[in-house]
Figure (cartoon, helix red, strand yellow):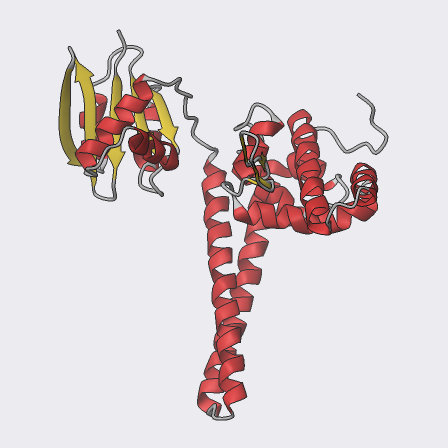
Length: 318
């Protein structure tokens, strides 16, 4: 019978827990190649290694096990947190967390983790760096404006801050060029298909390609919609509680923001989105609600187009 080998991952250590003949086994090792080798020695045919997606720290171990053709499952940390709360666990230690991961895995169906393409990691890092630089640029612009408004800004500091702001702008431009080069080198066809959809530009196309691992990560558009955080959330209980519905913002905020911006253009030039806009507007729906619906529509179109590797057809009929 296969066993579950649960691993609680931190920056420097790995805490391992598994059940043998109804007795819990536990040990700790280092989060490096030596520790990976020790953990891999535990495996038998059909065993599963299960861990949380702990920032970037789980990735080397998961990749090591994946490259050895072993069964690896990576679980959203929020799922384990809610599972522990449901079990009313009060203690929180690495040992206890590893056991909680194992208990969850033993009672639920596991999905095999697949390593993303090598260039996906570079693209993710480029996007993260660009996003950080944008935040720094916004902060620097705001600080310069505040200093200038005080009327007491020295020439030396003003010169320094303007130089820093220009440096941020140049670095952002340089990284964005590199981002497009890498994306086009590996996913040119997918990007061309996505950009054929009226309303979707290169930035959104690249983001969607990255988060879906070139649309291999999800089986259907509903899974992608939930991942992005555009799924509707109904708030209702019995006959008295009927709250206002919202989207479930538990996904990627950057992609949601891009799709929302795309909806501004799509409502004018994308025939399906324009029809949706006119229909919902006639029903008296608020502008924000309509644009979220259009963003959801664009995501559905993107999944269909990219999955089939075909170009957008305005009058396509299924």
